[in-house]
Length: 139
Image 1 (cartoon, rainbow, N blue to C red):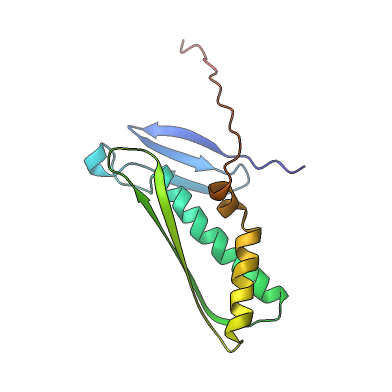
Image 2 (cartoon, rainbow, N blue to C red):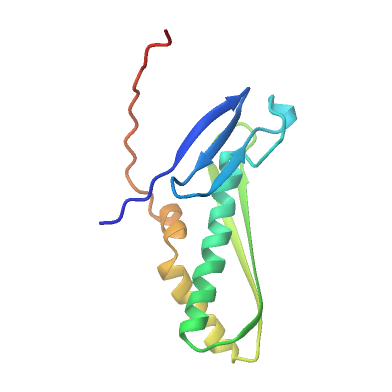
C-alpha cells in the first residue's frame, strides 16, 4: 500500500511551508484581513486547488489513454463556504475542453474522471482521519 506524506512547518505568524517530502513545497498563509501576510493560498484554498488539479490531471490521462487529443483543457473548481463556518457546503467543477473528438467520447472521459479522481473521492466519501498531539519540550 502506498503512503503519501506531507508536512507543514510554521515559518512565522500564520505562514507555513508545506512539503510532500519529495521535493515540492508550497507556502500557505492567511489573507491580510484574517491576520496573515497573504503570501500564499490558505489550506482550504489549496484543497480546492487540489480538486481542480486532480480533475484536470485525471481527465488528461483518461483522454490520452483513449487516444483523444485535447487542444485545450481547463478545470475550474468553485467551493461555497458559509462565512461563519469552516465547512465547505458545495463544490462546482467545470471542465472546459476543446477537441476534435465527439462530445459523447468527451463526456465518457468526464465520467471516468469522476470515477477515478482520488481527490474528488475524498470530498464525495470522506476518509477517516485520526488526529494526535505530540508535545516536545521547548527548552
